[in-house]
Image (tube, rainbow, N blue to C red; front, side, top):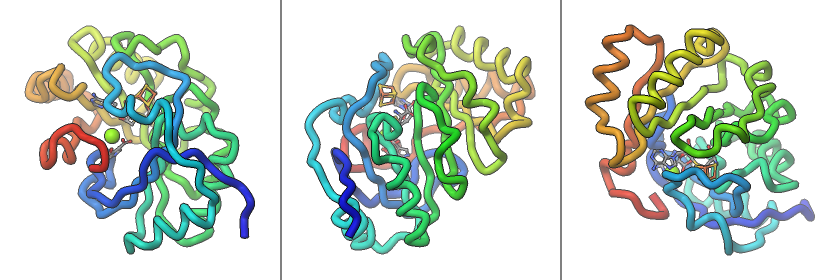
Length: 215
Ligand SMILES: C[S@@+](CC[C@H](N)C(=O)[O-])C[C@H]1O[C@@H](n2cnc3c(N)ncnc32)[C@H](O)[C@@H]1O
Ligand SMILES: Nc1nc2[nH]cc(C(=O)O)c2c(=O)[nH]1
Ligand code: SF4
Ligand SMILES: [Mg+2]
């Protein structure tokens, strides 16, 4: 019995809609609360509310779905005191674990078995100044860096940062358009034109089911 608990918005089973794990049946654990306010956030329903759940209760709910991959997201998972211990508990239980995180909180102490999906917030997000830049030094090739792009100006900013800081030498880089804001075909054309060593991706779950909780 582990006495620690977390505030949880939802636990659901779906196809991973992003990253190199795209398409894999995955259990998502969405933690409540976030210190950022990105203008495009599709998960604002996780800013408040939620339910306090003990580790054992969460692990039992995750196991019920019968998947071997788990994605911990939010809200901002690393903003909760017990999230590091929870990530370790998931690894100890044998899951392939990924973490979606904003870049604003330190990732260095996350269990090394976890694949950390590190957002670098762009000027268009409105939250660039919250970036914890030391996170770049903690990256390993099993992590991924994601830029979610609002427009051409965001694209050029991200492209120049990738080139200057050689971000793709640290971890694979993902470029993702803000849903229904930046046309995916525009982003695809820019990446091709610039021969940029990044993976352009579109959120698969929204193509399949639209933008709503629980998918
Ligand atoms: C909801 S956030 C939760 C995890 C963490 N707070 C973060 O920002 O990485 C999960 C991912 O969804 C992305 N995202 C949020 N709203 C989006 C949108 N409207 N279009 C595309 N991606 C979006 C975020 O940039 C992040 O990569
Ligand atoms: N299907 C699906 N894949 C996802 N990958 C990352 C998500 C997230 O909200 O962090 C997400 C999500 O909300 N749904
Ligand atoms: S950091 Fe993540 S959860 Fe928080 S507002 Fe930005 S996209 Fe939404
Ligand atoms: Mg999502």
